Amino acid sequence: MTTGSQTRMRGRAFRDWRGWPARVVGVWRRSLQFRTVVITVVLSALAVVATGAYMAVSIGNDLFQSRLQQVLVESKNAAGAAQTIFDSSDSAGEASTISLLNSAKSAIIASSSSRLIALYATPGQTTGGTTVLSFASPELATSGVITEELRDQVADDTEGTQYWQSVELSNENGGTDPGIIVGSPLTIPGAGAFELYIGYNLAEAEQTLVFVQQTLWLGGLALVALIGLVAWLIVRLVVQPIRMAAETSEKLAAGHLEVRIPERGEDVISTLARSFNGMADSMQSQITQLAELSQVQQRFVSDVSHELRTPLTTIRLAGDVLYDQRESFPPATGRTAELLHTQTERFELLLADLLEISRFDAGSAHLDTEPTNLVRLAEDAIDQMQSLAEAAGSDLRLVAPGGYFEAEVDGRRIRRIVRNLLGNAIEHGEGRPIVVSVDSDEQAVALSVRDYGSGMTPDDAERVFDRFWRADPSRKRTIGGTGLGLAISLEDATLHGGALEVWSRPGAGSCFRLTLPRVQSRSFTSSPLPLEPDDAFGEAPAVAELRPPHHDGTRNDRGAEHD
Image (tube, rainbow, N blue to C red; front, side, top):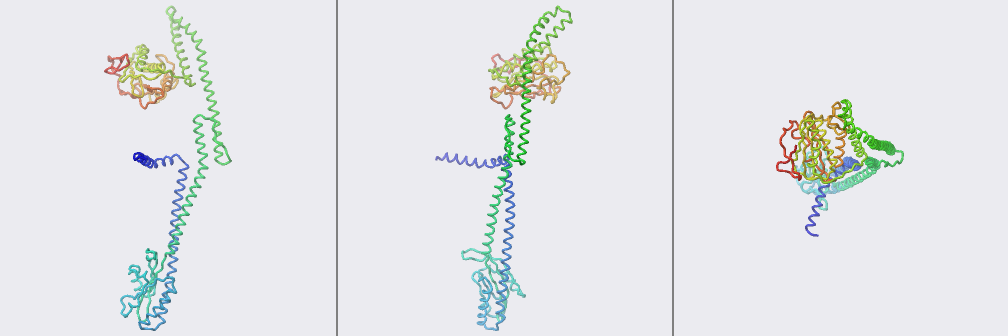
């Protein structure tokens, strides 16, 4: 393996290691079973640690206190046996005293389980030869084992009290073991005051304590593991039906209305499954009824629209004949012929819009895309709406500051969107200028229609794309319309994978923005044009001589604006 490969593997391993916390956090957030088991194990471990520590300390204290009482009793008996031997002797010579001391040492060993004995003459005495009588076991002769503090307490005692101290005793392995030194005062006739020290090794008690502690901790670990396993099994039994219910809910939301939760047993989970399945059956029944009703409604609208075309065509032909001869009729009859002509045209538009809406509702609408220049398309729509704008007193302007790249769109539908937006702006523009802006970037093309009319409130702007909705029902339509134009425009934009949005403020006018992806099946992240215009609360721009874009679809030096 090459050095570069090894470096890359180490780098990947390092990255994987750095990603562990994030993965654990992700599992923690997603898995209820993982959270429950972890919390149970952590709390159980804390309880076991606290209980184990308490038990270990208690057992250690009990072992020490029990051993301490035992050695104190032994030491007292040994000191008493030695003092009895000393009191029963009347020898005064040094040789007799040494013999007596050996007898006392044998009695001490016989009365005690320890072989660690030290006998020291109390310092400060005037009796001669007492230093010869002192002796100590090698383990106790080490400096610091019998402390000066303990010796002072024993030397100052006058009532035969025992004194003890915890110490470290050397062992055969070169280490140390815990131990206890018990000191008692003695009096040897003819030799003076002495101090008896007996050492007791607590290695066996320590081993017992270590064994008990290890047993406690191993038992605690086994208990925590068992609790974790039990929690995992129990939570699995509870969470599995919940997970199945969640998966079934997702499938139902995705449209698979036939899926159900398996029902087993008579417990609470089974009751939940039966209730859920009953709810799913009810939802499926209602959704099926609504779908059938929607299909019947769509079919009815489509059939009625088609059936009305034939009599409407006849009425239109008869009305056109009357309309062409209206000058020869009396004034009242001529006005009636004009009204008949106007309403027949509006009826045709309404039928066409109803048919288009029914196609959207039935999901049968489709796109016939081709590369299209949005500026050219906007120019055509402006030309078609120019006469209506002049009649309303509005000045139509085209502003195209960017590059005019072609986009894959259905020209017929986009042209209809622009005409609807222009008609809406003329209807509510109150005779003020209307600005059509076109711009593009690498991902999308956008067209906005800005008017400076009365504007709308935020609540009205949210409903402006609803079918047959009008902000002011009492307002008279000046250029006709069916009330479906903006709703159809929104459907056309959505069919392209684009967006149709509105900005409006009372007294400041409105701005409708259409954003389309440059290439079908591709998305965009932002629009080339802002939704809220720069002059959001300003006055309408003054009329100026504006230059149109070149007919080849490229940008001129100053951008492009067109009346």
